[in-house]
Amino acid sequence: MGEAYHILCNDCDFKKDIWVGIGFNHCYPDSAYKLMKNPKIKAEIKNRLPFVVAAPSVYDSFFHCPNCDFIDSKLFVSMITLGTDTDVLDAIPLLEEQLFVSIKNEAIYFETTYSCPNCQTKLENLGSNYEFENISEIPCQQCRRHSLTAQPFMDWD
Image (cartoon, rainbow, N blue to C red; front, side, top):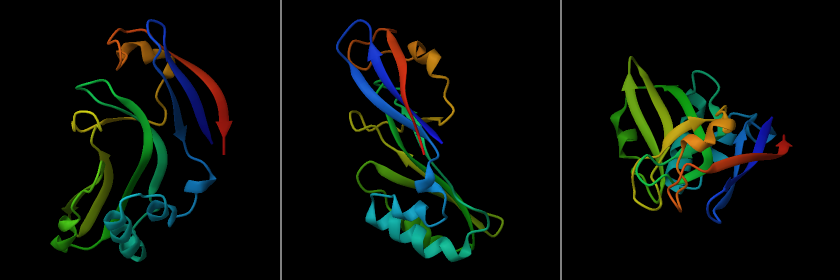
């Protein structure tokens, strides 16, 4: 189940829709690669699916730029596969969608990360359970005042 919010600034005309949560699109392990935009990352995840140790975590999450206060909802994927090969570290990030890869104890850990499209700073993943009644703690990316409000407008599956 997911939720959608209108994020509005009370001091300027900023508005953005944010979608967070797990819907039926994310129920199956192969959704981890089907929903990725970056073709190189998509192929890497698809190739690793037969070696997945546990079901991937796949959900729409709330992201924030600590530098310029850009906010957005983006797909988050986290999975663990068996292996120790270091060639997966060549999964070079393209565009703004990236894949963080680390190898520990015979396992490969994959996690999507994103760069801010405005300033290229790594976005913070605030999660799919972010308490949107606290959105005013984040400054508006347009006017930089702490005037954001969140209005829920939809539950989705």
